[in-house]
Length: 308
Image 1 (cartoon, helix red, strand yellow):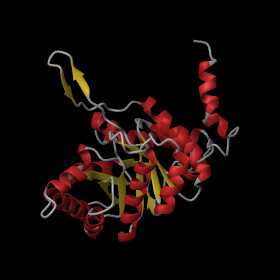
Image 2 (cartoon, rainbow, N blue to C red; image 1 turned 90 degrees about the vertical axis):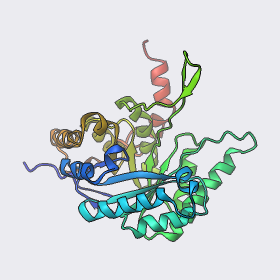
Image 3 (cartoon, rainbow, N blue to C red; image 1 turned 30 degrees about the vertical axis):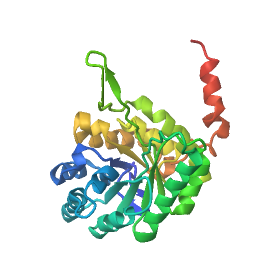
């Protein structure tokens, strides 16, 4: 029997496999991106250009010029797609930044919507409108596919994603990881620390991709958070994801983590008689199981009513 076909399509791009290297220290340098490509990554996501960095020197942004150069260098040496990333909260100068990154050769753009709204006068509807305006403003000026990396903190995720698609999103990355401050009990100071993901972190993205797959059948979906092995890749495919994105695994184990994921995914497909990634995709989405309730209250009830 022939080996399963691992190829997939994401944001209209034909990819060699279902594992993408998310933004991480390994996508900051071309040499490590080449290692990721050799290990089987089907695309790389570059580190985000952050609003704080770009606006620190808006007339001659070093952050922008460095990111543009990274796109050019990556495109010159990699054969796989290079996805640039913007961390935006509002329209305005972001259009010009998006144009610069795409002009440097980026194959696609990921809009990273990461906002903590601590202003007591700002309501959720206003935040959502600002995010949608940013999506629409960026989409107008770029001619490459646009993915929107979502927060899990929207009150009505299905409604927001549908509006994001209407605003121009070609794909959705589910979900953005929020980092929070910790407290040093000796110095009584706040500090930030990096918390790498674990496979358990995938559960929330799985729930929502399973729901969104049937609601947005033509939209690309990427599962991120907690992807450490072929098991998580297989689960992402089953609920309807087109690709699984990994960062923590390659930070812990290096580029070889992707090779291992692909080998494990191929073995799983073969054991279950799936000839390809496409055959497995969506087999356990909300439209293919015992209804959307299994992804909504049923999960909660099953756990709460179980034997503790």
